[in-house]
Length: 372
Image 1 (tube, one colour):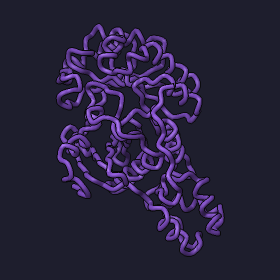
Image 2: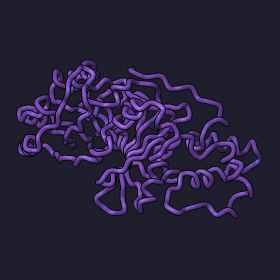
Image 3: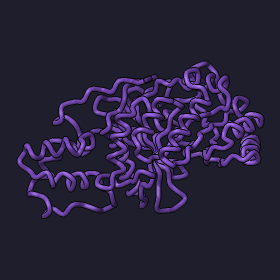
Image 4: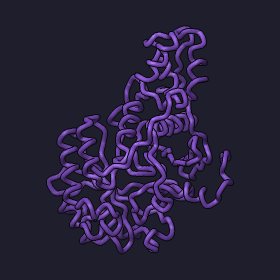
């Protein structure tokens, strides 16, 4: 199975609270003389499942929260930069304890009181997708489950500060979730579990460029989350040119794995398709994609490319024109595919995955400890 090794666990006392499982915190608390029944109230206070909800102090032993938070920080990641778009999209660059940075995005919903979050699973990415900014800075390491959860907590607080509630989370930020799946799933359990983050399983989507063994492992985990597949081309030749992993896993094999996941979970798979001018946006490619999806209950999510400059292969990609985009969408629908066009978010704030981190790297140490 294709797998990037999980980073070794550190000593419990050097980790943040979001990095601890319920069992780990319970073991520490009982060793300190506290009751195991106090673990969940402490974690509920940290996760802040509902705006303004706090555990009354008289329900916990005096000094317990202070003892816990002095031993394990509530969060270990600090804010390096914050950018807000004219459309309300907010992008956070978080600095991890080892100095590395990771991106998270909060996107306002059509409903005035809701927001969606996009979080990362790795520092950088090893997939080498030619049109992606993240891959241009390479892969550094997997995120721990706690570092993933901390992004969720930062976004939840950001949403609450704007009068919104974080309702959904997608793993579509930096990295390939299937290559850090153990930590991703552990983070999802903490975010979604009604006793902790209380987000809900159906509110989580895990995306992949098409790592078939990872999709099958997600199927076996049986969490009931949604799956999104970044296809970006209906044929193997075009897809392999855009996504190197396409050379290892054929389009039909990826869709077959998605079929297996859908059969087990009952969740409709989303097919992510980024339109690139003159590359994957012909009407014949639209017809071919529709043919691939015949008989499958899958939903095509079209998006127009957010330019990231020169690619790894020295190519400059451009977004498809709106006219071509609308024709592609219409062709899909004419041939029976369920599809819609996702509106662009935050084009004025380096919103494409990896752009803000790359810009920060280019500016060197100017961002250290800064927030704007």
